[in-house]
Length: 328
Ligand SMILES: Nc1ncnc2c1ncn2[C@@H]1O[C@H](COP(=O)(O)OP(=O)(O)O)[C@@H](O)[C@H]1O
Ligand SMILES: C[C@@](O)(CCOP(=O)(O)O)CC(=O)O
Ligand SMILES: [Mg+2]
Image (cartoon, rainbow, N blue to C red; front, side, top):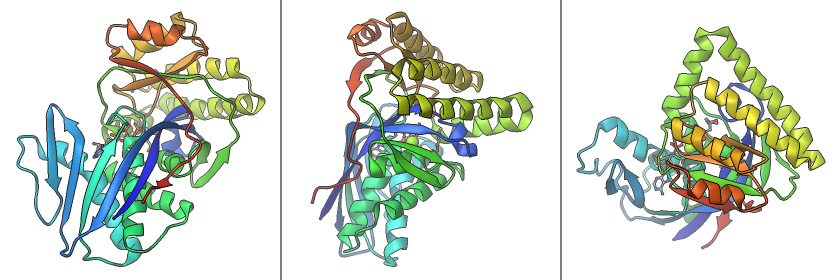
């Protein structure tokens, strides 16, 4: 058996725009997905994913060729739920050339699903890493990140960036622009997260921004303006200017909101954080529902969020210095 874990992330800046070649700066956080992979004697794939709960059902499912789980939900919901693991295992088969190999895969994760904290990337990175090691191949981190990116690309309907997967594989703060992925020096950041208990469908939200960009020139300009914010943000990060970082995060949230990916609860958590004195606050990840990220080194934001209608959980997040961890 091989066991790997990989962290989730928050976006300081640049989600969505990064899909169209603008830069983005995500930052790995100490919430992890852990994946155990054990080779089977047959070619079946069985996935135990106790956290995989969508619209109130929890499944232990077997991927192809054992068939779909017997649960009463739509095919598309099920595909969205199972897609990342199935596709990660396909990458393991592809990179090792062992097309007919079967696995038992067990996933345990601290990262809420579909909430913008990169659970999909963490699961893909950890699953590919453990799966390849189970077959005796240890991938270089860059290759691992690339393979995990292909998983996200496939499941998100052909549109994804390398940001989440590179960040999860390497840890720390990173900068991603197209296929140029690098690590950044980052100061200690007082990260606070608010979670509305909900989720957004990454593929759908990405498609929504794509349609807007195609229809309106000003939406395409908005995406480019996010790129400008990210470039300013990098300077602020390098200078350790947290106040400027906060202002830029606020601006970034406004533009994401204009692109239609915020929600009432995300907006109210963002405002609660700002009213409490956060230096900045924005949604993180695909949006639609899920998490916001704020910067505040006092307890005020966390406290204010915990009293905010629609906020289910508020907590501080530490930067994860290490990306993938090879546990067994
Ligand atoms: N603990 C888990 N077990 C199984 N699959 C998971 C787990 N966490 C995440 N996933 C996969 O990732 C998907 C959520 O990814 P996504 O919509 O991109 O949101 P995010 O990456 O922001 O959490 C889930 O639908 C599921 O397919
Ligand atoms: C919206 C996007 O920029 C980030 C999605 O992040 P998450 O899956 O919501 O954590 C999509 C991508 O970069 O592939
Ligand atoms: Mg994701």
